[in-house]
Image (tube, rainbow, N blue to C red):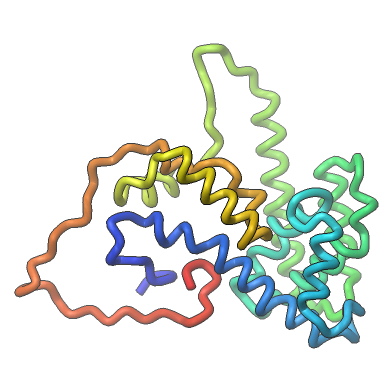
Length: 240
């Protein structure tokens, strides 16, 4: 088994990817925020996870301010590894505490301020500091690449779509995704209601909606197909 178990009975990988916004929101609300609530001595946000979520959303959540930045570089990755919860919890706390300061800041200024506050947060260990530094370097590289690409002049005959094509080829060519704009508009509204943590990042149809493929799931020969045991953890952040 590599990574998570996908919906192997589905004709495409779309069902598996459609789960991710909801499972990540669940992990945030039902795993990370209870961790913060159990450590009120460190974060001072009380012992009610839902009350902490309300504070986070009032501070802009992942919609505006420092929240989108913190989620992308310091919270999302930590949801997959509980050892990094101190970093993620400090990031949530920073969004709540400092959300009014972000206005007018450049992404580079936000990164510097966020990193400094996370390093000084209570409960941060040497391992946490290493994780924060790794995330900072990744974010710094991404910001530089984005800045360099923005400076490139593009002629009317040329357009660059900034996606990871290897990633998209794998998931889009496994089978034909739904290509209905109405479907993805409805999905976006559902995300806003049921998975607000990730919804701001997924307001447009995915690349796979525009990626035609004739690949179809092969029909196995039941007489010769080997028996396979699939194992899946109960609270996988990506697929469960």
